[in-house]
Image (tube, rainbow, N blue to C red; front, side, top):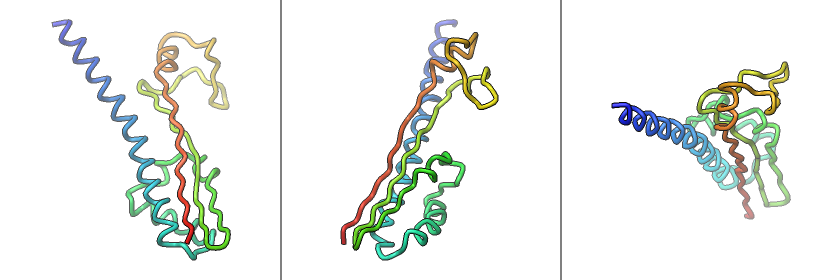
Length: 139
């Protein structure tokens, strides 16, 4: 019985972790779809018009502002040179399967060498995924 529970827990954790990783990639695929459509459908729009329209385009793809970290907007670049339109951003997603580390300072940082107990496990299971959606059009 203990072996069965062990394997059920292990498989359950693997499924849980896989779902968290899949969700991060799925969100990025939606962002990439929006980026791919912008040069095609808004090739003549200004940078300000594209920035204003992006939240609506994300909403069509069922993305809410909370699905993307603030660094997405900070790193968003829309560049036009003649008929060329380029849109890109970069952001990272941190996956904490057992929740974030609890022993953090007032800025939300922590020192790996000072972790104890479950925080060590939480840090070891932490996964950082970097995304860089990009699209360009040369009409």
